[in-house]
Amino acid sequence: MFKKLEDLSKPTLLSKTGVKELKQSFNDQYPFFKEIEDEVFPKKANIQSFKLRSEYKVEIVQVDKDYICFTKEDLVIPHLKLVHKFPDLLIKQQVDLGAIKHILSGSDVLAPGLISQGSQLNTAQKGQVVAIYGEGKENAMGIGIMNANSDEIKKDPKGHAIQLLHHLGDALWQLSFK
Image 1 (spheres, one colour):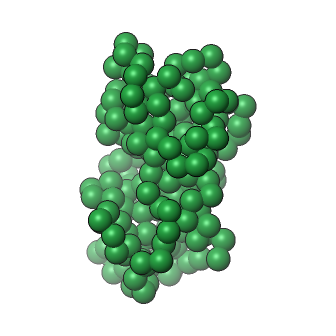
Image 2 (cartoon, helix red, strand yellow):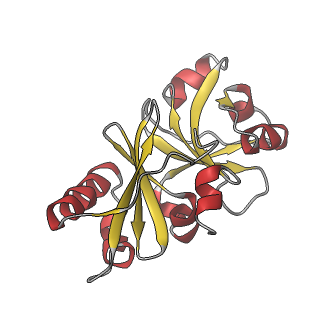
Image 3 (cartoon, helix red, strand yellow):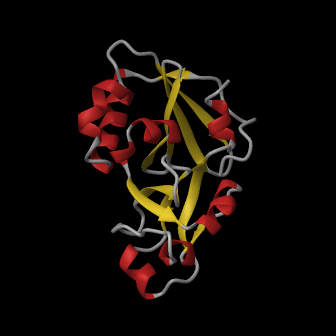
């Protein structure tokens, strides 16, 4: 999804209402967020957003100097750095060793990579945002949306199980180091 970020708009400050709506969306989608809300959105923080001009209606949110999330349609999706800092924010799905290089290249997660030896498929619903871990790795390497619920994937392990949205090394990840 984030191959190039050349079409980013200039930053705009989020209004108090915008920040309140963003926090509410986080709380609605991620139950654990309530515990970390004040740490992610400190008082008097400079919160701004950048719109990505593309076929995806994406907005990237920055708090002070840290990119914390992006929005896609009605979803608020945390940045990988936020997931690294708060690993319990998202449900973890672990792929086997063979899938790691493909995911780091931007490929979706295929069902066989979630049910083979070395992988771990945790309970999740279709449309739910999940963190993608590699076998033997401590930190998440990607974030995606479940294309099917975990029970369906176990019954019929074929096709794209998780749509990859953001991964280590993509343009959004690299933007966070500029």
